[in-house]
Image (cartoon, rainbow, N blue to C red; front, side, top):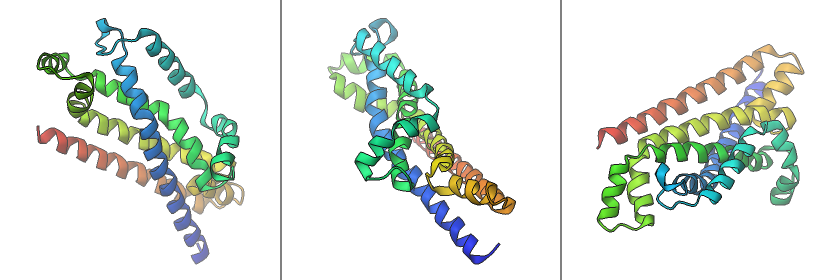
Amino acid sequence: MTKAIWTLIFQSTLQTLQMVFFSTIFSILLGLPLGILLCVTRPEEHGGIMPKPVLNSILDKIVNVLRSFPFIILMIILFPLSRLLVGTTIGTTATIVPLSIAAAPFAARVIETSLKEVDTGVIQAARSMGSTNRQIIFKVMILEAMPSLVSGVTLTIINLVGYSAMAGAIGGGGLGDLAIRYGYQRTRTDVMIVAVVIILVLVELIQFIGNKISAQILSKR
């Protein structure tokens, strides 16, 4: 491969990292409060500390609907929003918008699941000592669920790597776009192989770091 191709691979890798980094931040910002609400508004008999069954049911259905959307279709639907926010519908920056919205319901669900795993005895003990709902959520539930939350965020980031690769099919940029434009359309098998290998390495690296952080948190308890 020529120097120009390697430069293109390097630039595409940076674009993928940029998409994944910013969409992770935005999806967690959207998904964290949603995941907390899904957990705490459950019926009291199911462990909800602020039971609101109607709100919980509505949020649950919204998350399920958004999670069921194929990413490519969701990205097309969100073209107007991308144009409104960043002024374009193609390229790395524009792709961050649908990536964040697509990953937010997934992040919310894994956050909800992590918080559900917190021992009810710990919550009841905090309640008996006069802790408010806010204190129970942020000083008990989130802290107790931190190893599981780290694993959930790791899973979200890995999903975003996959989403970012799919975004290349409709001009999203990054390694997916490189694999399609050069690897498939120009029959450059070597470029496609390199793009796939880099994606696989990124996934393995993210999983390794996530596991290490989670294990470190557990070891300090």
